[in-house]
Length: 264
Image (tube, rainbow, N blue to C red; front, side, top):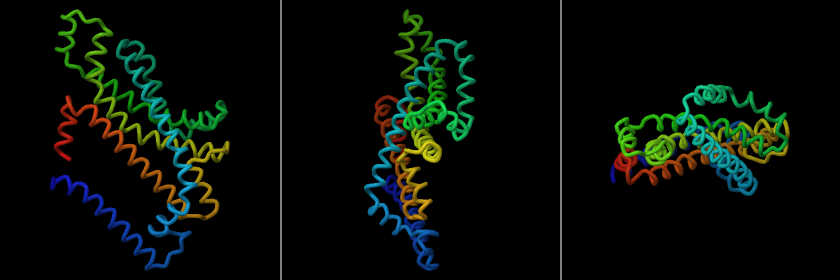
């Protein structure tokens, strides 16, 4: 219990120290809000502009979760397909790598040319960013099965799909969930980047990225910081939710979840 309290108190203490130093610096130097707003001013902006920022947050989260679900489903299906056929993996996997290493800011303008709907543009961009970590981790899990267990299934007369369902997929589940935790933050990043590109090029976006652009044009720096704080908070909340999901799914049978519970 003491270790758990200390592990939670340490980050809170660092945050209070940083915010306190930030507040003191702004007040001591008498910095105007359009240069560097104090944390208290940002908190006040979060409250006064809560209606506008809440709507924008919902738009960004809608894109993020839609992209995460799409990337998870596509990655799982493709990883299973790769597991069943080495030739399909050799034929398609390099293109997945190409999508991963190509910056999304370079792909997004091309997507804008061929996709008219702004939400579809953001969904495609965010899905591309979140896709590869889930695919790579799931493939690793599908191939990390104990060969002795595979031999046992063959001796019992289990077919390819039955072995996949009862052995490979359960073995790959911890890897899939690990990739999902990584992809959660990446989906948020992809959604924000796509909002920046679509807002400045196509218009019509109302996510948090658009609020940052709008606030910058009006020199409303406290609102810019408030939107950034919401993006950071959303990323933390997504990671925490996916971590809790992983612990819930794996806690009864996987060592990583039990060790994580003991170390918290």
